[in-house]
Length: 66
Image (cartoon, rainbow, N blue to C red; front, top):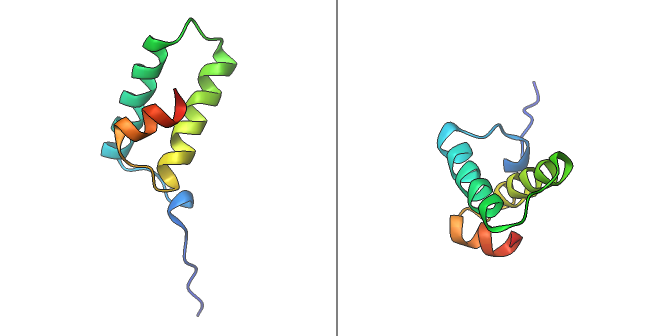
């Protein structure tokens, strides 16, 4: 039997991880002018991408995407 190892990027986010990403998303949306739905989706995707690649600190995520 073979075992498959998943990278952190392929694992589902836990509730507390989603909460971190959501706080960063809300913070960035408040700082920027009104965004389109597509821009909000792109921002959310970027937050999750960077979170899954190891940027776990809320301040670091916000600075990276500001």
